[in-house]
Amino acid sequence: MGTAYALEPDAQYTPFTSLDAWSNAKSTKMDIAAKIIAYLLTRDDAPDVTFSNGAAIFSPFPQLADGHAITQENKVVLYLEFPSLGHIMRNVSYFRYSSTLSNLG
Image (cartoon, rainbow, N blue to C red; front, side, top):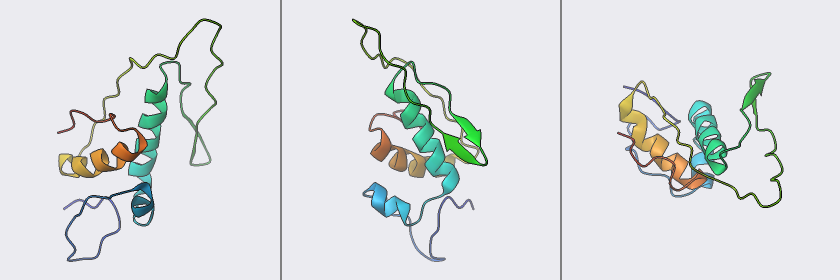
């Protein structure tokens, strides 16, 4: 059995309804993964996420040149070692970026 977040021993999974609900039980790894996905899908020119002292560093987006528009063509492939946790990742990512995980299975 895999555990993705804090849950009472006999409790059943119920989808989170907001980021506030998630923040009370969140898994740091899944939360950071969802933040990274949302950040990278915001703009195609998103800088790489770096890490310092265990914290993710999200650099500011570059300024657009005159006449250029933000593009969002990039895709992210997320590998989950335990596919049974995919529904939680999809649920959490929805609040960060609603179209993030369309084909997670």
